[in-house]
Image (cartoon, rainbow, N blue to C red; front, side, top):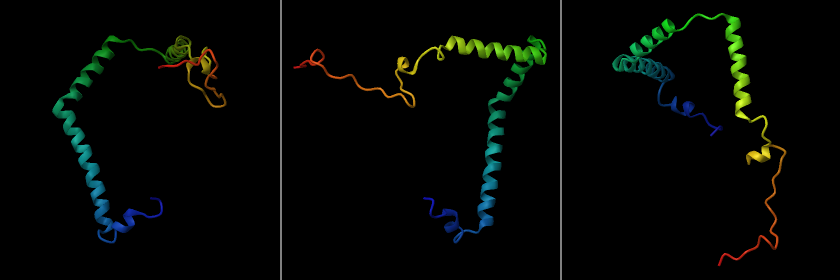
Length: 114
């Protein structure tokens, strides 16, 4: 796969200018299709109205208050997730450096499922 370049082999049949034009036309068509889809479904109008409603309801906050809220959110998320307090073995997934051996079979665990 890495030993040959398929575009080099393709350039023997099609000129590089045609390939570049094809790529540019595809980018333009994808952008045009996306814009058409947004206009057709009227989703741009919905998102604009939603943004205006959000701005009208909310109040402006300063940079310090925004940083404070971000720190509080991070602390609460870490504290409530409980991941920091769990050991890898109790989660049931071993991590790098920790090996879990299967339980050994003893006479008490041997049984016949006949």
